[in-house]
Image (cartoon, rainbow, N blue to C red):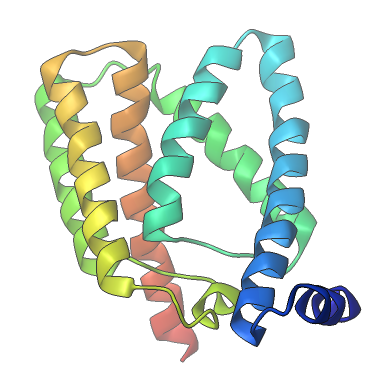
Length: 182
């Protein structure tokens, strides 16, 4: 990949940071697209495709701003991502009170505000990342998703609130892991 980056930089007269950003984007796209397709298959076969696509879109919107867990191995990431989607799908079928879900959504929106963004080491190296902007956007997105659930409870908004709760929980766990490992 280093050779590709050098060729890209030389051919298009890019700065080191611009070349790093393009290589990072390409790596993330190929890795994420392959995981999306692999996980999509069982959801499509079992009839949960709409739920999967809902969770995928909501998670993508929130997680790109707030960050989260990153695994060194493709397969450990694939396993964890699959588990994440299955867990939210199951949680969305539980009969919990609207009040409890709203309280959990608000608490986890606050957690997202306090802990985000948590970026991968590779993304941290890209000097153009505006951490304050990511924090504001991730908090606004989480609050918006909770608000959708407040306005109208549908299967989509139920997935939305569980995505916020899950993302807040994962950021909290990651913060604990980072604290213990440092």
